[in-house]
Image 1 (spheres, rainbow, N blue to C red):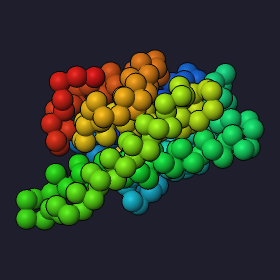
Image 2: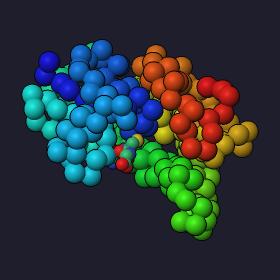
Image 3: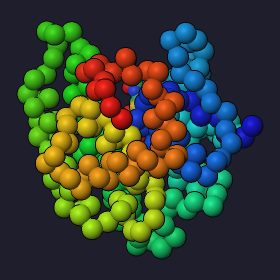
Length: 219
Ligand SMILES: N[C@@H](CCC(=O)N[C@@H](CS)C(=O)NCC(=O)O)C(=O)O
């Protein structure tokens, strides 16, 4: 098997790549990171000492960072669904939206969750407040953008939507989108219904009890 993915089904960045793989039914070997079996994590850390995942091996060559993995798949393992727009200007706008979801949705969302995992005397309440303000700002900006569009960039589902799907999924659990931002809510529902991401949601279901803030009884 040429492609090996080190991943965990509950991880948002792994779901980003899994969504892309499922879009094109790209075959790969799943190296599940698990507390029960330390070897995949040891292999991952030998490849990428930060221990962050996902990491892809393509014929033993490491490909690191979720967005780069999806770009790599588009170049070396293309399928019928083109996740990178062929027009360079459209691709640039798509990459901007991918950066938006990573930097202004995922980063503050992770801040709130990781803070909850710390011992009480090591928490950072001011940092968490800032993160929640950033999520509100991101929701407001995205709500205006999504008022007249179906997908994050252009007319077709793209890498940016692979990023948006898991990041908005967990962001809403962490800092509710609620009724304030109806276009973001509608977009999140479209993403959740997309078969590639719906599969990720289902694969991650058994791990919901692990969500540090408590998973809501929905989705
Ligand atoms: N910039 C990385 C972020 C990856 C990331 O933060 N992954 C999380 C899981 S969603 C992780 O590795 N967490 C474990 C850790 O931080 O040790 C990417 O785009 O792939």
